[in-house]
Image (cartoon, rainbow, N blue to C red; front, side):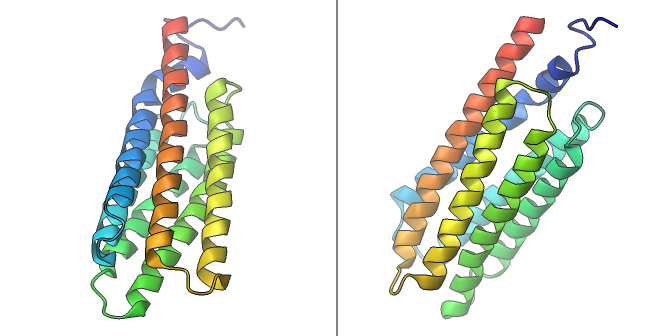
Length: 197
């Protein structure tokens, strides 16, 4: 059977979700800019910014998965990715007010674990999507996120005297790069919609 623009699953997915991918990219870049512009802010402030970002990102991912569950093979993984993000955001918002290093470590490890799980689920989700440049960007974004999570965990564990300020800079740079990748992926999806219209 020949596919038409109306029945092509790739076009259907692209039409429904490109703006959600764009929104996630914009939110990631905003979070990264805030982290870089105010790296000396209290841990409480960074935790709140990350928590709010993660919750919004998670809700967008959940909406993406639910909206295209009929056309997206890896929608379950995308749904899991969204749930993980929301949970990470809630943890970050719950602990920032704790006094001492425990609250800080909880927030730092939350970011590292969030990145690892988010990256793995992103890779699986993208690998099950139809072949396209957006799929490629999804895979690249997932790999970059996993690498970031591993490096971040290593910094927390083995680098003596690593400062919160340095870790915040790492998070900020990563968020901006990841946001750019999401925006490029969204533009690719939008072009696909335009071609099949």
